[in-house]
Length: 117
Image 1 (cartoon, rainbow, N blue to C red):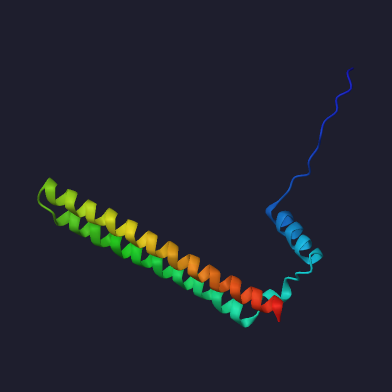
Image 2: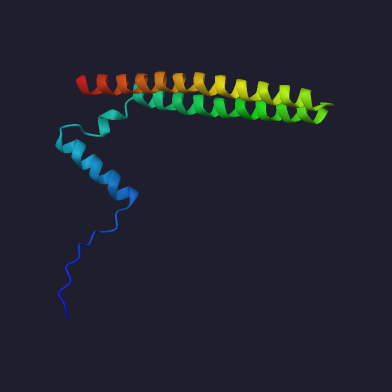
């Protein structure tokens, strides 16, 4: 029987990946515990609240558009409603992306301040 050389890889789980990343950070001198300070926790909460508010606004827009479509009387009006919906969605997503980047930068600044002092 021929000799088969196979490479086996242990089944990695997301938890194992995270544990490995945390170990690497600790080896680099960055412990996880100080990262969870008041400023960082506040920023994480702000990110979550911002995301939930964005989702709620998008749902309100969806419901409003559905109502308008149910009330419209011709195809031209339906097209106008859909065009407005798509433009509003694009504008909101672009603005939200900028806001999330801003909040992410604030979180990173809080984490860096924690590590620095």
